[in-house]
Length: 431
Image (cartoon, rainbow, N blue to C red; front, side, top):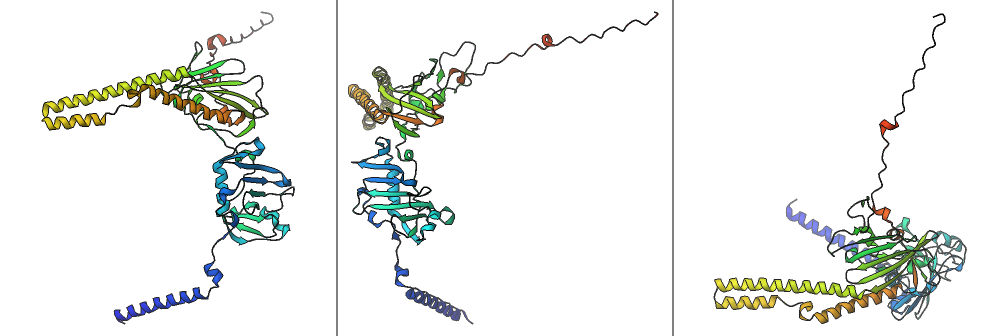
């Protein structure tokens, strides 16, 4: 068989295979060939932004959380309308909108519990009834177990319908009210802080500070005579409390007031921002109230330093440019000199701190006051439950910063007991 014959046979085989595939596809039922994924909640499609309330109900018909929208803001009704986590709500609604049906499951009520889609009025109900209001057709969906061991997907059932389904994706619902609260409180890095002052309930204080913003470590103040700090960076953790600070839970301040004895913490930034914290522990939880303010004198003092530095940096840049220009004059012609002068004037633009110090000061003070306002909008009227690792940097004492006191070992010579004396032998009789 020659090469020409082999080529012909290979081509015929390919044509035959293509024809067989085409016939097989053409014989499929039209619903199977053209069927698209079916949306779990078609009434939600293109209407996510219309949802104005989400009600989550758990076992025994207990309301887990009511999330209500007013304008662009969402609030947790059960937490005295504390702000809700907008990003989490939107993520949840988008998951519901994008969920599609994978397969039909049981319609036997006796088997609902295995999927977590039993009626939430039942005592042992595992699922969550999700009610979406604000849509042309309100949604009531029981979200059950995640099918992790079975290839993914979430078991669901519309409230009132017998049929349950396996929906694509993980749309499991957070059952803790606190999971829907806005957790972010503040994010003030330690390198912005000048000092930290802690006062324990017994009135004893622990203070640490930096002299310059660029200093690597905070130094502990008033170290007792004869004692040493455990390391040069021992106090750095004290200044990390406000960095990425999140709450575990929140209560109206009127419902959770501080006791008589509390921990006090003051965090002062180089730029004048001050955060005051009142903290306490109760029943295994760590609580705190926060307030922000601006130390105007400290803010102006820092602006003075920043403007002086900006002026010095600008003058140094001008001097360097003039020196370069002088060198150009001595080594080049008039045209090159003119180009060098024009380039130096273009490159060295005056910063606002130099060109208009008054406006620079106003802008910086306005920004600081705006930050204080924003922080207090978050803090005011609320008592927060802090993570334990954050609270542990508030209740520190001086002893936590110092090396342990060395105990003197007893003098071996003085402590040695004298050897027992051998009693003399009695004299022999008749001697």
